[in-house]
Length: 219
Figure 1 (spheres, one colour):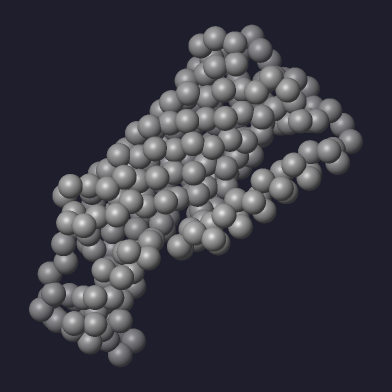
Figure 2 (figure 1 turned 180 degrees about the horizontal axis):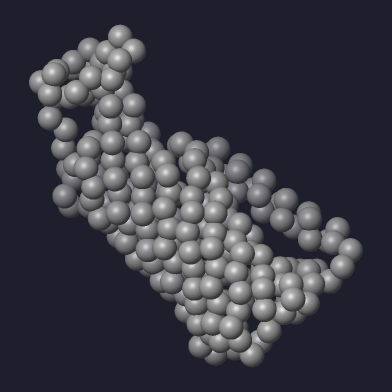
């Protein structure tokens, strides 16, 4: 958790440090545009670090308020709880373990564009609710070789090998940099929490953090 907090602090400080150094002012966003769409990619941080890809779109409903929808994939969001569950099985059969979770998320919510620009950037906040399809894969390793669980008399449950859909909540914020009026680059931090599922005994939530870069247009 401390590592996660340090990563967030470093990224936020970097964004605010870069903004005042900009020599040229970007064009303000086109306020007459009602829709926007963008593709995103970036890094994920937490117990395990990996990457993410996604897409987002939205519609301006009134003034600074927009509704948005996003969909994406985080490549490996593991947790200490997952590792502990896997190693409990591994210890029982004399094997080491390698567990990973891949998350496909989709959520929608409200986005608020702050009124004051930070030099060349237009800041915003976002809050969304949706679902996450969590795919868990666990490998058993004996003498450096991955072996089938059945060969060791093991049958994994969905907590260690399977796909479960769970509720998902995300919030965060970022900056848009507008160029050529209709186009923009998007720098953002998105915290996400995958809630527990009744399908898994003693399930625990999963914390995620995405540092994203996106490119899109307004229309």
